[in-house]
Each structure stands twice: as C-alpha cells, then as structure tokens.
Amino acid sequence: MKALVLSEYKNLQLQDLPVPKPAADELLIRIKACGICGSDVHGFDGSTGRRIPPIVMGHEASGVVEAVGQDVSNFRVGDRVTFDSTVYCGDCFYCRRGQINLCDHREVIGVSTPLFRRMGAFAEYVTVPARIVYALPDKMPFAHAALIEAASVAVHGASLTPVEPGDTAVVIGAGMIGLLTLQAIREAGANRVFVVDLDETRLKMARDLGATETLNSKTQNVIAEVQKRTEGRGADVALECVGITDAIGLAVESVRKGGAVTLVGNVAPKIELPLQSVVSRQIRLQGSCASCGEYPEVIAMMADERIRVEPLVSAIAPLEDGASWFQRLYNHEPGLLKVVLQP
Ligand SMILES: [Zn+2]
Ligand SMILES: [Zn+2]
Image (cartoon, rainbow, N blue to C red; front, side, top):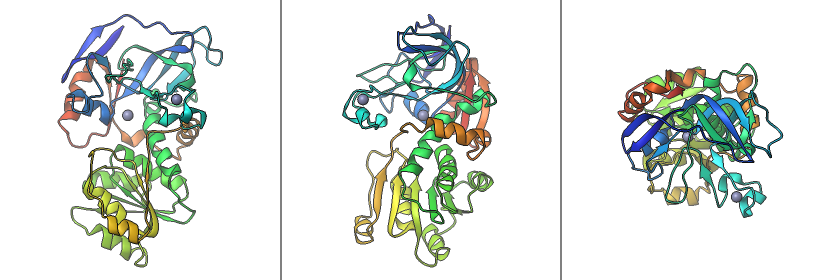
C-alpha cells in the first residue's frame, strides 16, 4: 500500500508498505480522508518528540471497513467509519471510571514516543481497535468526517465548562479548535460568544460560524471591550484555544468574578499566570484533554449542521502531495486551516 512515511525529521516520503493485518479485536480500514493536525506539523521537525521516525502520521481520518478481526461483531466490511485518535486500554483506574482520555496506557494513532508506536492514517490502510471506531451517516462526506476528531476536542472543552443558558462566553483564538469551540459553546447554551484573534480573516470566519461579536487583540483592548459589553462585569466563561501566556492572561481577565476558564490550547510548556486575579476573583481554571466519548454526539451535531466544518477545510489533496502540504503548513502559509489528504 501507499503510505506517507516520516523517514527522518522534516522528510516525508511516499513509500510502499505491506497492508497491515487486523488483530482479533481490530478493523482494517481503507482510508478515504485524513486531516493534517497541528500536532503532526509540530511533530514533523522533532520538536515535540512524539513523532519518532519512521512513522506514518495521521489520526483525523475516515474511511471504509475493509476487513474485520475475528472477535469483532459490531462492524461489517463496507461500513463507513471514523475512529478516535486515542487508544485506551479499557481496564485501568481511569478507563473504569469512564475517563478514557486519561487512560494510564493511552496511545495515539499515528504517534510514536519512546513508549509506543502506532501507525497512522496517511496511508491507504490502517488497523485500529474496533472499540475506538464509530459509524458515519451515509451522507456525511469523508473529508468532513476527518474533522470529527477536532470537533470532539471542542465539544469536550465545552462540556467541562460550567455554562448556563443565556451566558456570555469568550473564545480566545480563532484557529481550527477555536472556530469549533465557538460552535460547541454556543450549542452548550451560551447565547453570546465573543471570539478574539489577531487575524481579521479568521475573525470574519468566526462571525460566519456564529460568533456574536469578534475582537482583534492587535488593535482593540479586549478586556475593556468585553467589560463594556457585559455591564462592566466580564464574561461568564472563557475558553482558551491558543496556549501561550498572553492568550491565557486575556482569558482570565475577560471573565467576571466567580467565572471559569477552560484551557484547551496546549503550546507553551509553562506560562505566567495572573495569580492574584485568579484567587481574589475566585476564577476556576479547568484543563481539557482531547475528548472522552463525545464522538456520537459530535457526529449528530455535524450531521444536522449545529457544528459546521466545511468552511474550515482549506484544501483536499491527494496523499501523493502530502509532503508539499506539510511544508506549506510548516511555513505558516497564511489562510490555511485544515488540509485533508486522500489516499
Ligand atoms: Zn489532532
Ligand atoms: Zn486505561
């Protein structure tokens, strides 16, 4: 089969690999679409240490069941499917509590660390455990289904946020996850959603996707504007989708006393925190990791367009062109959100 292999850092090659065989609890999936994730682009140069070559990356995928392991009874050849990026063990302290995203033995499809290596979906075929696979509606295009993983991250972040109907939410960052989080927090009950970014094109997209107001942190005083628009109080909740000091500071300062900040962005290993503001205003900080069983809910939300992903797809390209698309994303070419590769 054709596979896009990270043979060494910054070097992606189209190679011919043997088609993997599904184990008893696995499915062999013929990949129809696989999105390039920011974490793939960061992993591509070795900076995260989570794509140790040789590795086939790709964990945001959809496709068709090609073969079924002998112990799997709930899927058939020909089923249209997607799968979670997290492979959980099902047996540890956290899995038994239903917190599969916190599994002690968590592995991720298309990721390699010193502890594990899981071949991913920038290939014609991949094998994954059937317990992480979900059926797709007939009409959902494969390229859209490749964004279910990212949408689940957003819906999980919103689910951890104590938002009440009628609340005002601030979303910091209008990248891929921010634009999905905006939609997720609105669906969770926020009736005003402010989105903050430095890029006007992304802010326009945020308005198209339902942001009630947008603020440009390059040209506007975000905290003053949020307060002005909330009777001087601040927003009820904020969701931070960038992951650096300045953005987290904006999230903290934009919520009211007793408000909550959900931290989804995960870039800087350490940040500076306005501690006194958090403690004296009794702000709740909540980390959010990946997703935890939200796939069926997200598939339903995308099927009836409560969450729209189509505007987030910048390009759909053949797998053969994968290396050049990686390079363009790596070079931060402006205007690119999700690039989906098709084997
Ligand atoms: Zn991802
Ligand atoms: Zn586990």
